[in-house]
Amino acid sequence: MQRRDFLLTSAALAAGTMWPASRAMAAFNPSPADGWRTFEVTHRVEVLEPRGATRVWLPLPSMQEQDWIRPMGNLWQGSAGSAHILNDRDRGVDMLFAEWDAGEKPVLEVTSRIATRDRAIDLAHAGRATPLSASAQRRYTRATKLLPTGGIVRENALEITRQAKTDQDKARAIYEWVVDNTARNPKTRGCGLGDIRFMLETGDLSGKCADLNSLYVGLARAAGLPARDVYGIRVADSRFGYKSLGKSGDISKAQHCRAEVWLSGHGWVPVDPADVRKVMLEEPPGGRSLTDDMVADARKRLFGSWEMNWLAYNTAHDLPLPGSRNVTLPFLMYPQAETADGMVDSLDASSFSYRITSKEITAA
Image (cartoon, rainbow, N blue to C red; front, side):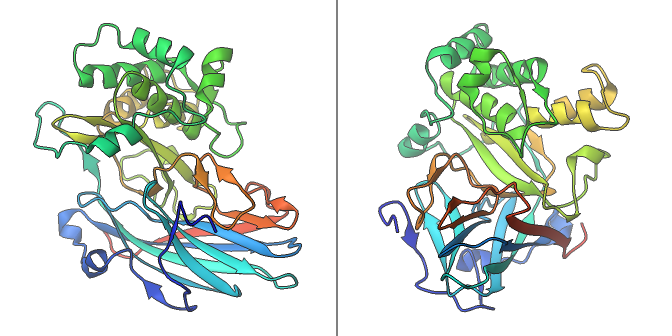
């Protein structure tokens, strides 16, 4: 166990035990009258070809933001000999870690309850956002393995923001550039990797959300703006008419990475240039142009607001998996498993089966 990076928040969890993210969140009673919606999201995983000891890591709702997302607790059941909640406080990640001995059948089910509320920032009027701490400023402007902030990334960031006079101007210039110059590639596995240096060096600016929104985050950091990817999953259909920007019921393939940029006077501002490109490619009848009315509406909406039919897991990059054999993930958005043969491909259903479902508990 890599204890220097993680705190074991419970020595052991009894199956069937509900545990809250915090006492305050457990006591929270979301009101539909105030715009809150409550969801239950269930992960059921099974390692189909276990060899030797088997380990599984599942992302849990980790973000607690008073205005738009509040984890309300988790419940697990399954065959695991041991299960623990692990919390990396530096990276802001909660996960469930379970282990099985050789010969045991690895099956695990976790249900998480969350409350969400749509976000919209009035960028025309600055508020009184609490300034970022020095440690948060460093964390959200530093380079990561796949998000360098020097070289070609910085060169592009400086060129894109060359005429920007304020941080908000910089943030918007980068957003508009990403929307104009990228493309959604339906053949990309999963949500992509977010290797932005490779994207810029090759000129291939296509991919999915973890590529396009990571490009935004990397360029913003290189321009001196705190920014972060937010890894999560869609949990409900869109109420704004976008068939491509929602998923309910079986959400096993509905993972989605978003982005935020920090602006003085506003705090964390939600952005999602990747979803603009998703609307262009996938919104019926498909193949829409940048001048299409629905695309233009999404483009305007997705700088400064998010529809919260989506669960935010965490904002972590370069995440070491505790208890693994020295494995570091670029991000934790999918269930992960390891056997004696090594890490299991989380996108290969022949060896690692999982089903993720969502259910709304209260109507909006």
